[in-house]
Length: 436
Image (cartoon, rainbow, N blue to C red; front, top):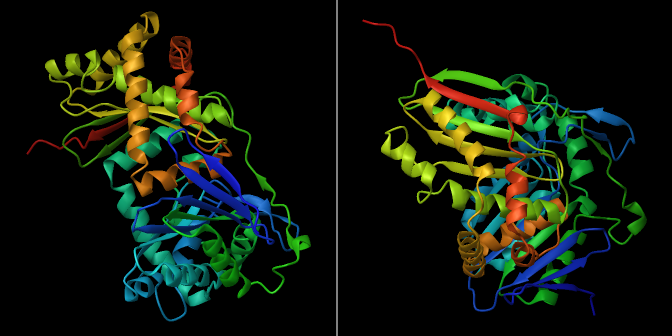
């Protein structure tokens, strides 16, 4: 019998975890009664990692920005076919994505589960890079970079990151730049693939009503087809990566860009010290509470700004945090940027000084627990929770217990982290048109 670690949530969810001989970890979230099944083959490798030790040569190497995203594109393209087309032929939906700290390839199916697992493993295990197809991809990704660069919300977001961070690679677009991807070669792609797509750095996640033992056997059988030394655990090598030292101070307190838009976009961002493990989950939950308490459509700030005609869209309060970076972004469209910024600064100063409404806090905590209960029936939310736990090395199913222990002091302590010293303003303003 295979050994499994079983993680159970307070709400009755179960995830079975086991590690194959080659170091690949498999996670199976059992979902009785669901017909849809999701399979995900991922690696703990995203756009942040540009310096590392080549696992084959044991030499330190620096690669161009955007190469993790580029590699994702190329792995879904086989010698004579595109992965999306191959999955479509068997009636299965598939896709892939790259973020700051992960790359994941996935499928969704109801009745082609075994075929989908076999195909997904085949695609990830048979890279096909040539000088010709690499050069072709540079043009495609270059167009993608241009498209996102022209998107106002995306520009507001990355300008905020550029303002907050000095040397940290989080400030660089996940796809890189047209200049950086021009230096990508098939040799560099193979180097990144061999290092970060090695089994000990990857994970296989299944969400659905499946036979746990049979599913693991199926994954293992198909992995063995492509690994000659599968049974030799001595082949598992440690992966070494490097992250530049990031100063505590922000890079630039104000970043402004003019674009062809009607309504200005303002993003007020706060650079925070990094936390790890359970503290990441705690911060995420605290920020969810703050968002609901102070920035929802029911909040005093939204009501006042709306009545004054400064905003007519919700204000977003978003936290982003991993073991490598941490920040908050408060973003909104506004017809009066300067007044909005001043009002927001005053509002944050006031809520720091005010008492937190204990009754509202408890209502919001119950609301979040209700959302967790709802998430049980959403396979997409399930896999996101599990992948976050894998990447950030946080305990699975710990959110509710952490939430229950969040107190008024935790809210106040976090609000006090939002200071002028670590604040950045990102403005996207309309192009000033000359008078006719």
